[in-house]
Image 1: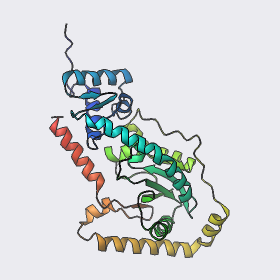
Image 2: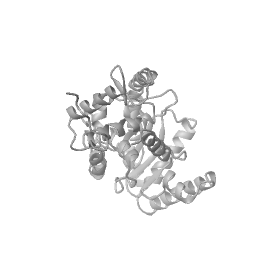
Image 3: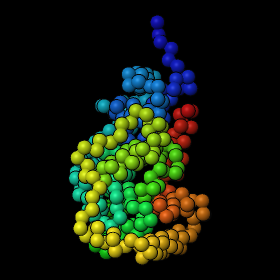
Length: 306
């Protein structure tokens, strides 16, 4: 007797598998079965059930398998492109570790994580190494300004190995926007420096792992703990109290004023989302990548009638 398979609406696991594939289709990035299970948003799903539903989608012609990768579009080139990106990521990860430890030497930096494509073990030819930086409270903008000045002066504003575009302080670790994009970015962060700060981040963002209940936290074995050398201690001591407070507020005012002039075409709501500027949070994503990804994800779901 032929098995009658339930529709996606009737089967939460099947729906979650389709959504995982549809999300990464935005990046033309096929997934392995283990990755599909990790990004399956249905908490009751088992690994075996996910694999079974995935296979049924292939048999129905709703998904395609090329080697060990699965995707919703019949694009044979995606697998080869992914392997190239994975190999490139292997070469960039040691560089990211060295740069992260260097960033950790700057005053008031408490944790350094890799975000963006490299955090998902993918580096395209035009990709940058994106860093998510955690600072001491009340000194985020001062730490950010020092890092940006170093990049502009000594790295000639190169973004390739030194892209610091998201900062939070230790009192604002919880990500405010809670959606599939921010959950994906949160659970895939790679801790590089400040082991205990990463664990604090995970505790503050339990919601992200509730969305992806099968995604394990990143291992922290071998990740350096937060530490301060002599010069870092000295600089932080010099910039405590009223002087540090004044410099931090001044750095924030100057930066936000510059951004408002540069991106004056943005409406206030878009500016707040793409260039979030609080005393404890700084996000610099002027291309509004998050919104574009979510819109394309929704388009994929509509195309699938899902």
